[in-house]
Amino acid sequence: MKTQEYWTNDMSRGWRQASENPPLSEVFRTIRVPASGSGMRKLIAFLGPGYLVATGYMDPGNWATSLAGGSQFGYALLVVALVSNFMAILLQSLCARLGIATGRDLAQACRDAFPKPVAWVLWLLAELAICATDLAEIIGTAIGLNLLFGIPLATGVLLTALDVFLILALQNLGFRWIEAFIIALLSVIAVCFGIQIFLADPDWGKVVAGFAPSSEIVKNPDMLYLALGIIGATVMPHNLYLHSAIVQTRSFGERQEDKWQALRFATIDSTAALMFALLINASILILAAASFHAAGRTEVAELGEAHSLLAPLLGATIAPSLFAVALLCCGLNSTVTATLAGQAVMEGFINFRLAPWIRRLVTRAVAIVPAAAVTLMYGEGATGKLLILSQVVLSFQLPFAVIPLVMFTADRKKMGEFTAPRWLTVLAGLVALIIVALNVKLLWGVVTG
Image (cartoon, rainbow, N blue to C red; front, side, top):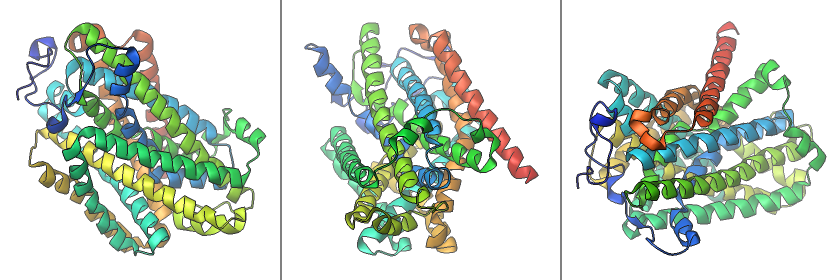
């Protein structure tokens, strides 16, 4: 179905070309929003996309950076997790604003606003980011399978291709089933970490102090590297593309008041979900600080090593199993959402459309092939370093997604009355500036040794 009946923005509203197809067309506007009734009923209809987005903020790559940060520097990097989470809340609210106001996801907006060569470069960078994301998530899922069932890592990497069929099965039941699946696994993760934190018995005074800013993070190259990895693992480029697409699964009206209401509920959804993600991310770092750093094990970065050390350090045989279950749930969740993000990027930037199962196999293969090659080349012993490196790669790609997002949402010709307020644009611009500055500093450090 042509989308001009849905979309009011066209070339006369500041776009170089009009989009022809909706984002994730098979699920576009498929979830009904009550036309009447209480605000709570309408809010419930909008709950879901934020938790798919939040999954990307607590993926296995985040585990690796948080484990390394907590074991090496104790609670000191909690402030980075907090600040990066606020960055994420701000940027995801802009994604919802873009999608709801224009009917475009971020990938489509880039294609329709920029010259074709620029759009193609941004597409290639977005695909690189998704490969880095999938590398972390596939390896994390494979490690979870290995820890729980003894499945070899390379075999586990190949088994992650099955998530394609899981998505298709759930989507055939309705997009709500995908959301329910994600939320159910997130609940399991929360329970697992709640028990582990109880067993670790952290120093809560030091936990609170860890949320205070420290100049040492910028001065210490090792801390800066991990801090940038945490930012890359928390504010993830593919989530910006994903959120602006899946927020349009809701069948809200085309009146301005309907869009404002949709934006308000979508922002509540993503903010609440990302605060939950902060709770999980902080729990990983706190667990590492209380278990490993406190015991003098300051070099723990491998997920498998962390799993084997938990039982002797916490004195509970259930702790490693809880860790492995939570890791597997995180990996499954993240591969599902990354596949959806890959679909949105491929369709949005180059309008490449295939049958859903073929398209998902293509996007999954783009990630599985390099992940399997890297795993076979470096083996299980280097997975932690690879996960951290993948998050740094994501951080380098972030400006190429964040800057267009800020530009579009600040453009009154494109956004109309939904243009982001000046204060919001300034804050988002500051976030982009911080990310670029940190990347330049890290790159300079790498170049100069």
